[in-house]
Amino acid sequence: MSALTLNLAKPGDAKPKLSLNLSKDEIFVIKLKWDGDADLDLHALACIGQGGEAPTITSLEQILSPYNVIRRVGGQQQGSIPKAADGSFSILGGAMTHSPDATDGALTDVDEWIRVAPGKLPKAPGQVVEIPIIAMIHPQKTGVSFAHVQNPEVVIENAEGVVLMHAHLSQQFGAFIGVQMGSIMIDEHGRAEFVQTAAGFSGDFNTVIENFS
Image 1 (cartoon, rainbow, N blue to C red):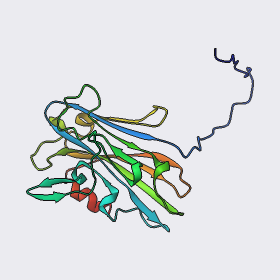
Image 2: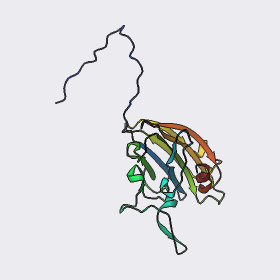
Image 3: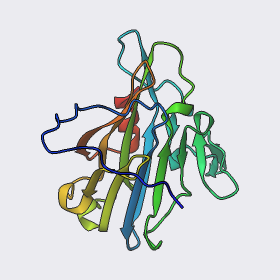
Image 4: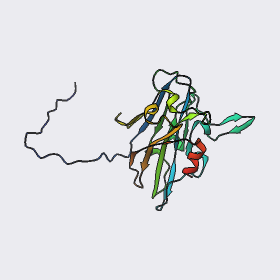
C-alpha cells in the first residue's frame, strides 16, 4: 500500500517560484511514423564545439544515419556504423541509438525512432554539443515531397513522455523533402534541452552534412 499524502497548500499561500529540473540524465526520443510505400528516414548529427566555436561534425562517427550503416553498395563497403543483431545501430558509446531502418510505413505505430541520452556523450571539459534532428525522404532526387507521403508525423518526447514537438510533415512542410525539427543542445555543464527549429529544405542529406561541418 502506498503512503498517504496530502496537499499542504492553503488559499492565500505564496505562489511557488518557477524552477527547472537540473537533472543531467535527460533522455530524448524522436519518433517518426507514416503510411504507405514511401521511404522516410531519421538522422541526427553530434556536432561538437569548444572555446566559443560553433559546434561541427569532423568525422563519420558523429553521424547517426541509415546512410552511415556498414553495407555494400556496388561491391564497395560503405558506412562506418555496425548494426546490432536487432538491426538497430548506435554511435558514441550508445549515447545516440537509431531503430532498425524502415523502408516503408508498414509498422502499426512508430516506424523509426532515435533515442538520445546526453549523459552518455563522451564530452571533454568545456565542450558544448548540438544534435540536429532531421527527417528526410529517400531517395531525394525523385521529385517526391512530404506532400506526397501519407500521414508523416514526427513526435519528440523527453524522459517523462512530455511532448516537446509534434509536426505533421505533409501539412507543415509539404513542399520539402527534408526538415530539421530542431536541435538537442548540451551546454558545457552537461545540461540538455530541445530547441525547436522546424526548417524545411530541398537538398540531399550530403548538403545537410556540409552545413554542419
